[in-house]
Length: 295
Image (cartoon, rainbow, N blue to C red; front, side):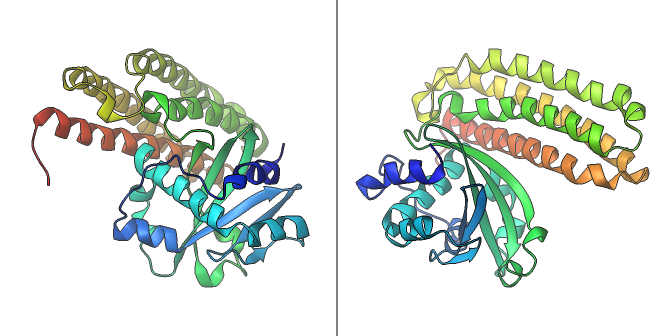
């Protein structure tokens, strides 16, 4: 099944209904109003405006007919995606600098993986430049959704660590293709990154098995203390990796390895999103443990 087949299957009920209702702040309202879908379909990409007008892509009558006749479903899909980011990510807060700009839009590129699962890559762009300079969009992060269910085990943390393995593999592949002096960087940097990623993921998978709950509200206050300690530990590991990546990036820029750096920054962006999400969780866990009412 492809993207359109899956969307058709889930549009039969007119809209998705299993996600929580959330009252949006101005930041999230701004994101919703500028939300552009980009769908991969029939080996092509199709960009749609917030009002579902086709902006970029070759003519595709079947897809355009589906879009024009399923606006209620697509509105619910937007809410599903945005609310997933609210609960299981810090991507929107992390990129408020871009997203609050009155000229900015959000592009959500949906890539079908399998069954009802999608990878969504998010980009920011200026509204008045999206048609003439689409390639200048700014990558701000990604998420993974399953239209069969909203909730995710392990507080949604598993994706961040599995993503590190995937990104590490991609970086090594790109390094072989793009670095002018690959052997010079392999031992002191690329091999070290690989070892750090393997250790972080191994440690993380053991720790998150201790809290399989999908929501903080499902975790007892007593257990929250241990969960918070593990969150801090995982955050520290990811910060160490971030610092090493920054050191490597500095080296790359000094040596004018610019063809490779643009791929490397995506790795850093995903890592930073994971760090910020762990920070978001630690704040909420502190609030739950402390009994301090914030409203």
